[in-house]
Image 1 (cartoon, rainbow, N blue to C red):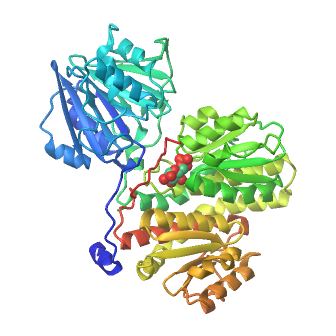
Image 2: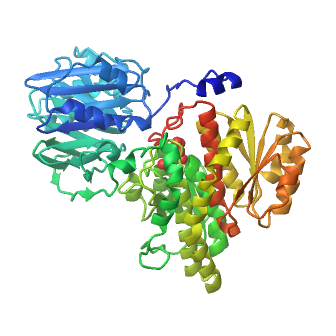
Image 3: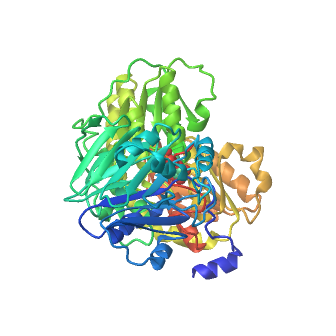
Length: 618
Ligand code: G6P
């Protein structure tokens, strides 16, 4: 079926082309069991991040064995002989410095083969360090920035691995999460700065990993490392310390996500599973928050305006959030892409800055949050990841409770970000006395109905599947909407382009006549969001404008609509909701459309080419 679709669509270019990508995965284990299988199992759970090569190093009775390969972990496994030993580290790499080759894959070892190291991040001062090391006789085997670290550890005269690593980290600049092992020693020393790293606590065994998902099968007890902190793990112990070696203790957190949460539970793709989890995710995100049992406890201080920042899907949630907050609280709200925030002149007087990031680790959003603080603003983070970097940057945190999202294309985290923004709008509206008690009650009741509304859209997934079969050969599509559904159209277009590789462009419907009409033809389908609200008549006008250019229109309307079918080629109806909430069922419909388009076109849905789930470089 997939091959067939490809042939009819003449799409031959669906292979992953990962060259300029950012995120690597780290795993380390030390215990009393054979390490190889455990480490590979943890590493496989990081596959969703995307990678181009992988490698593993195991310590066993005075030996350090190493294996690396390009391609998938399965390729590495097929080349592996059993490496006996109870301590080891492994890595999945996305190329940044140096091409995706076996030589550039991690772990790296020093000249004498005594130490092995994996690194996630970018060292900004590695070139002069490398030059000096080469002058002193070190032999480099890769083009990477990371390799300098292991040669520096080799050179260090400090008495033990911990002190050697600390002395090296004092000399490097940039971002890192590292894990290091040493021949003949059942210990791992790991450290982080601006790259995620967690410690997993087991019984007579301990782990480090760049992501909780890697560890969940083995433990749900974790300790988060913060920037410029390090750890030494042995089978029986965990010592945490700062980069000066000063010890500290931090209580482990119990993660309630279980392994099934992090796996596909029988769905063909994480993305579909996550789309179908949305009723539950919304329910969880509302739990206790509408009846005052659980308050997001923050005092936001004095401000007269709000600025929302984010990247990608989170930015699109922010665009919807602007309308939500302005309607509910009447506080003027603007939005800005995180990477652009620093360039904007400071015109507003200290707005409240809302930073939206599902991962909590996006470098551009972290940098913007820091800039906001520098400008004297209070910041609120909306994030899905407990203990993530943004939670330490922001003054206040609102957690979405979507559970782990593995598919690169954000779905349930987007919808729960909207839920957080509705809750924030309600809170601000109440503080500012901008909302009548009657409207408040209406909103609360609409929100309580959202899980059921979304479930009803999901029950109609088959219709979206048929539409996707019909439109799978499109090269380009427009998505149009007005008011709150203008950002919904942007998000629908983003989902379509990132996973189906069809060029999707979201547009405010009123702007079609100022350019895009020139591109319309019978081969350019237009998805028109026609919610049953004050935008409806104008949207109908836009639909006719489009059909006059022979473009087929797929209209997304609301139940009870009698008119859309007269103008649009295809109609998909979602349950009727208060206009403030229309983006929720509508985006779920568009997520399904994008998903099934990608299925029809045989795309690698959970790991689209060239994009990463978490982007930790600016
Ligand atoms: C990447 C992901 C997107 C995500 C964006 C922002 O580009 O592929 O799905 O929307 O980063 O991520 P954040 O974690 O900050 O929401």
